[in-house]
Length: 511
Ligand code: SF4
Image 1 (cartoon, rainbow, N blue to C red):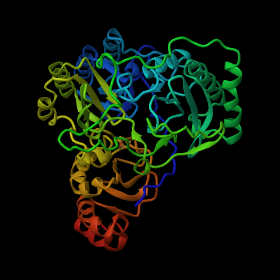
Image 2 (image 1 turned 90 degrees about the horizontal axis):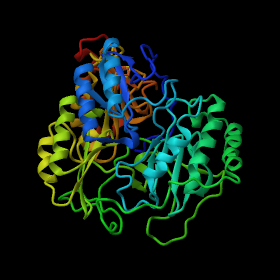
Image 3 (image 1 turned 60 degrees about the vertical axis):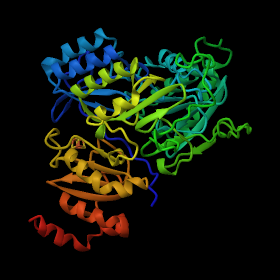
Image 4 (image 1 turned 45 degrees about the vertical axis):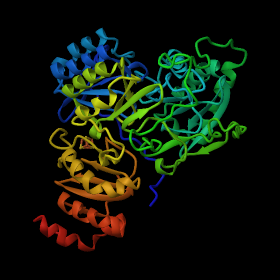
């Protein structure tokens, strides 16, 4: 079964209140305010990570979210505690950059950016230059996202703008259209910050919230902006071809070989849901690049259909030959302040100097060869997902009840139960989402199986999003029972409405 590749309009951002310039953008949720933390380049020093954990404990309820944009959210903040939390974060360089509701961070890079020998350009330098050139553009929507990818043939996360390396000096620049990436131009990597800034300036003037919402006419006009802006400009410094990684001394061997320890197999994908794909020739193939001309759209496919490399390493321990890579996902994107502290201690034990946030809603540690990386995994397994076949990686879940006032079902507990039964389907690449209501905070887009909480039960959507019409409403016990049949009869057949009345009676609710 293929997941549908259709797009969903993201839900409106929660109404903001109690926000003051310099504060960590607290937002109301069912368990208090929520403060977003945007680590530059998605990297937390160990001191910064300790400060976030301390802030979550002192000024929140001790719980943290990890987002698919490699940011953090401190939960359970109050009106009174938001200011001291913001002060603590600012002291360690994690304060907000804008006070006008615009984005606090524009770029998303792979967790190993700057350390991956497969990267053709200096990705961190280019991302920093794009932040410097474009972050402060007036009127830019808060969720504007620019993905910078230095490798060829990689499935990148969904973004408004995608900058992909062609070779050591050139990049492609594409913007999101309705269901495709629309290639705008190629340019020197040194010119990319100005090109992106021109695109985003023109985008901000349209008043649209997402690039994909532009009409064809608007997109055509916007695509002309960078050409005019960069004509005759001097090249900007700061975006050279990649420098050797500090961990690899004289340079990496041929590509970063990601292998699951003990499996002998190449790491599988870490991306979820839909992604963007730029169809370059495989890295190292020596084949000439076959790139479409500017203005041509590139198909975007569901994550499972993609054949490209993965944006982030899958959960587990990988060996590169020159380093250990520990990838740890937070179950359903949640962890506690105490778990974060334990992770910092583990990072120190293995010689990692930072926590790299991953869009898989987890962390990546880079440890030198010879460090006791494998010994760290068993202890971390109580807080984090440490294996790629953990079925929780295929299930998204929001806060739900009792943490969120909009939820009537304990989504996190139910998702934990569902994940076990879902394992055979997860192994085949299927995805599930347990949403407390139609808002779909954890996954606005479609999943193969979506449970939507309503009045203590779940509406079942097959191959759709939380806002779609459910095929049937069931209590969680009936969902789990039917899921057991799905591996033989298929998801759709397992959730037909023929036995709904029996399921309802078992729950004691009227049909
Ligand atoms: S989707 Fe979940 S977290 Fe979001 S509003 Fe609904 S119940 Fe709350």
